[in-house]
Image 1 (cartoon, one colour):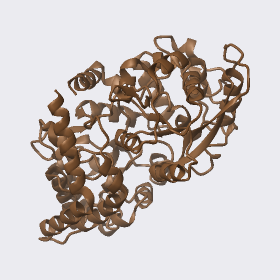
Image 2 (cartoon, rainbow, N blue to C red):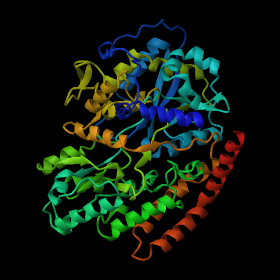
Image 3 (cartoon, rainbow, N blue to C red):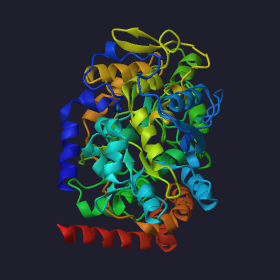
Image 4 (cartoon, rainbow, N blue to C red):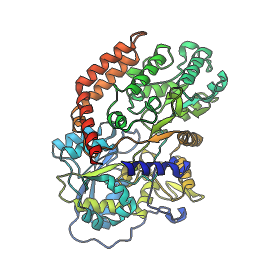
Length: 545
């Protein structure tokens, strides 16, 4: 753990701009001009013999107007190129992003799972390992079959894919550790009420009351929603950082900070819920938030000009749906700013937040996979600069044009070569979490130009600046799977939603009793067993040191 903390700390200290971009494509320190993508043949020895088929998962996000994630121009391009270059036939298997664990479990039960099983969440992958559905990846085979991948990702990063000294996960590269998960506030409303961006919970409540009472949008008090909110926004498990003690004892971090489960019984979470309960009782947030499971109602309220604050919930600020663009179209005088990251920090506490682990998505090879070498060949092939550059940027003159060495997307391009989800990341995330030109300033420029909503690039910069003010740290990494989490996570997720609705909407004077009852039910539904197992695993890890 000590080396892990040193690594993360050094990452944070490198540069504010370094934190601003997601991660690397295989350019190293080459100049951007040398990296420009071309849809050309990869120089490689011609493969021979019968082609080997592998099945690779790809996230399906259900974006309207886009072709299927598993069957589009780029999956076909990959299939054709990989077959020609490395004699591997690639077939994609769609995995719904919002129900990915359930889908993998269903496919595994039916013995129809793809050759690769992946997740962005370490606990999810340790759970798959604990079930025995992953095969070991011999290190000598990894180095001999996939030398480009090993060099590209780095052996230090690959160590996070080890269990008991043996390689079980292929960890994607993530040299940078931030993406703009954030909320935006109507700056014109702030100006109208003569207030500044709130930096703690007290200031936030004061601003929300001013929005409600002074009606800066001239909508009428009954039609004004100070903060558009949803169940999806409330449900995020990592929003209680501003209520945590600092320094946070490592054991508490291990026991309660979890991207899979809400820490309902933890004191910092109780404080967060009490804060939200106050907002609800005073009419400072969406009255029907608990019914808004997908954030669509919150989106609609903000885009129509009714709300002062909008949360991007569990997704990054982006162009789909066009939140900011639609608001300005409906309300031309609207001005936006990123909501200060300290809005959920109680006075006196430090502004803190969650950092990513120093790797991206984790991929394991299905135990039933008969051709693990072919999987490694594919990872090795995809990590080559000439392949990544095309997949990440598309074709020059169609998808993008170069401006000061930066690939600038062609606005309105709708050809078959269009990149999925704006970046096509769900295809190339197997090997890297983002782009890396080798230059922090250039990274920020590329990230902003290619991913920020057109006309609102400044919001990305504000988000990066906000993040730089925070103390950030990742969740604890257990060296063994928490098996009880797999057993209870689905039931507890439903109980978490139910508890949030009851506790946040508790009547005045009934919060504590409602919260205590919810905690009792949550513990009985399996959370107590999870906490007990985490405590046991944590104690065992400490005893080894």
